[in-house]
Image (tube, rainbow, N blue to C red):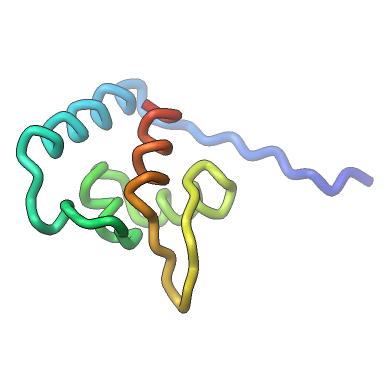
Length: 88
């Protein structure tokens, strides 16, 4: 019996371009909302224009590092940057 589960995630063809464009926009014109060291799933979802369930799924399968100090996950700026670099 194999305890491993294979997960296939299908991303839109232009996912990398969308993420890269959004990152460039945020770097050129950061807003106070995004200029902080930690983000919640909703904020990351809004920044990357990805559904919050997808962000949560990426956390659960290890594509996006996050910490769960209470009921909700928080994503560090460093982990978000690594996620964007690996997926975009």
